[in-house]
Amino acid sequence: MMDDEELAKVVRDVVLSKLQEKQAQDALSASPEDTSPEGTIPRHTYAEAGNPPLIVAANWKMHMDKRSTTEFAQAFDPPARDDLGVVICPPYYLLSLLKDALGDKPVAVGAQNMHPEPKGPFTGELSPLMLADAGCSHVILGHSERRKNFGETSEKINPKVAAALGAGLAPILCVGETLDQREDGATMRVVTNQLTLSLNRISINEVRPLIIAYEPMWAIGTGRNATPEQAQEVHAHIREVLKQLYSYNVARDTRILYGGSVKPDNAGDLAIQPDVDGFLVGGASLKPDSFTEIIRNALRALEKDGSQG
Ligand code: PGA
Image 1 (cartoon, rainbow, N blue to C red):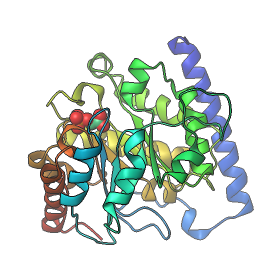
Image 2: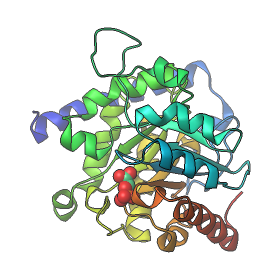
Image 3: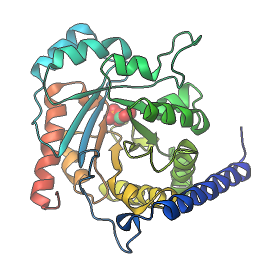
Image 4: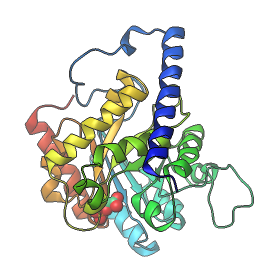
């Protein structure tokens, strides 16, 4: 276990090497759009070939079975729109079943974890290639329940993010602080460290499909969501870190989801925050009605707010 000082040094080294890499890239391919205009980064800009501006993802954790998955897929019918991405991440054994049961509904399927190697003697693990073979396009990585219960550190998550990107899967990289860290005023430092270490050696050319989920640990499964202002503050910080690590365009185009007790009745207020690009939903994603309502409430609030597009 590294102490705070050692960790800060590792983070400094990583930031430094990222900056050097970025400078080398900029010198090689000075693209006029990739310079960094001053001021706030506009919300919900379409990336040329990137993720839609609003993404709502379901994390089913260790819930559901074959029958409830089939019933869910039959009942669930989200709107098909270019500006919306819907993803469901069931337990591994339900991936193919869910994919088939959804048919051509506009829903992507993702996994909740992954081993970074393509194959090998790793009993009980699944590789990026296996996930892709099961029909996955996304994978949640570094969820706080894995960090807390299975010893996943950002150093261990880093090769997984790289492997997912290499296999054409969009990683949903989770970051977030504990209640103690928030009360100590350490939220921004913790999130910066998690991001910097998890994205170590991942280049600007590879990082585009990345999705980030800010999930304060004190809000997960507790019924206590971050306020829209608390979420916005950390999301804006995450975007700033991405700008430092990569570029203005990467910061602008990376979708940053909020997770932690998202429900139909708080989805609208959270969705209209300028740096909240969607949600990672646990408990409220297990029923098609509440998951659909979260999507609809987010779309409705954005339309009313007039800030989408
Ligand atoms: P929750 O879980 O919505 O039940 O709080 C979110 C998550 O853990 O991804």
